Length: 252
Image (cartoon, rainbow, N blue to C red; front, side, top):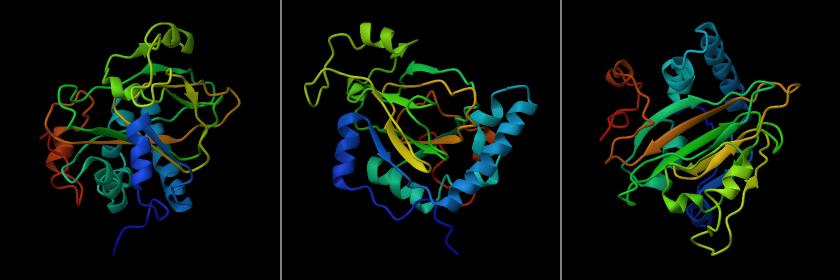
C-alpha cells in the first residue's frame, strides 16, 4: 500500500520554481495534511524529550530521523522526493533531518546562510521546512532576504537586523530585479512548507514567553558532487538505510 500522504495534492509549478529561483524561498501555506501534522507533532515531541533527557546533547535533534521511525519514513516519501526532484532534478541525495522546535521564551536565531557548491552552480541544495503549527512574524517567525542566495555567499552572519542591514546588505541589490535588498518577515499558518536554497540568508525572531512550542523540522536534499558540511548521517544509519532510501544516502 502507498504511504499516507503528507501533502495536500500539489505539484511545483513553473511559476513557483521561477519564484524560488528568483527570491531563494518558496512558501506553500497549509500544504501539510492534518494527519501529517498530528504525526509530526507526536514524532517531534518524542525527539524533543530525548533531547531534553540527554541534557541538550545535539544527537537527537541533529540526527532526528535516526531517532524516530516516522521522521525516517518521510526521507523517501514519494511526495517528498517528487518535490525535491522537481527542483533539483532526478539525481539527488538526502543530506539531513534536523528538528527546529522552539519553546516559549526561546531566543532569536541569528542571521546566517549555508554552503554548497559555490564553484559549481549546476549543484543545488535545498532545505524543505515543515512548520507544523506555523508561526507569526513576531513569534518565532522566519525572516528572509529575497535574492541573497544569488550571491552564493556561505558566510552571511549577523547578530541583528541592524547589523545585517549596515554590513552585509549595505549597497547590495537583488541580482535578478535590481532592487535594493530588504528584510522580509514571514507568517506561516498551520501546516506550512517552505523550500529554501542553501545560500539564502535567514534568521528567526524570538518565541514569546507565553507561547507554546513551535514544532518544526527540516529535511535537506542536494545534488551529489561535493562534500556537504551539513550532512548529518551516521555510518550505522547509512549502512541500514530505511526502506525505499537506497541510492539516497551516499555522499556521491
